[in-house]
Image 1: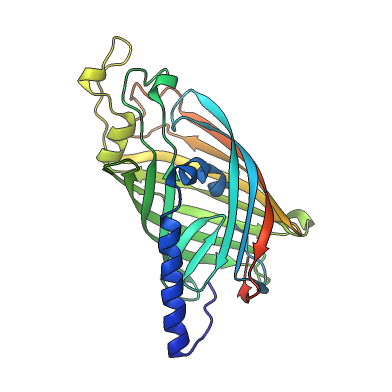
Image 2 (image 1 turned 135 degrees about the horizontal axis):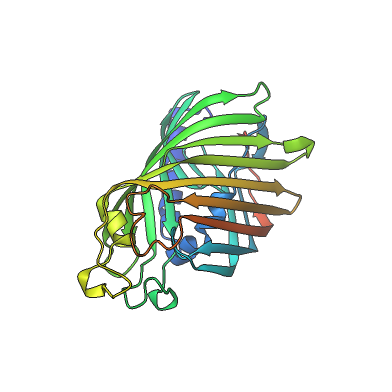
Length: 305
């Protein structure tokens, strides 16, 4: 990430302003953030040559999503949801289609930042495998992440990164509960102007997922009180939690943005693969969104998006 040089006074003001911005973002409606996470994951930004772009852009649109109740579920639901669009290109805090990130430190080839994520709730009444069990609460994820640039083309229109976010998972409810942690290292490939189509950005990332016992037990464990003749009691273990592959395509037009993604999840060989709540080893998610840009900053900054 490019960092502008400032004098001491300017630097302190910028740091305070961007930290305040991050705190305001964390106070947004978390249920909306949870419902839109899958779409955000699909819009992986590609990098091109540096250009002058607005410090911030804001807009609103609509998106359609299709994804399983949880990874391993045999039930899929479709959603039509509002899609907020907000981009902030600060030297410390960045908000884009990849979420809100606060840079901790970085160099030309390595970055460390605060990574955020979320997952939607699951109503057990509507899920056959979990019928009679407690609902799964919406969850937020946060923690440090390391990004290492492995390769970039001469014009920076293609770039390969290694990313390793380690996140604590907490439920969103009146009394939040620590669920556990997730580690999801990925190889991430970004391509700008893919196939010669100017402005079209293609992103692809893949990698394994690891989780502790507390997290896997929350999602895939079955207490004795919830056991039935077709759903035996089950105690989950921590370790390998499957793998993901995400492919996304997006383009920023004059006045609006469009993006689409598809994500493939595979829990074959996962430590909880024999849970009675796992009805399918493979899941496919997809989404499409369009947003209209309603306003932008007059201040311009250098960006590699």
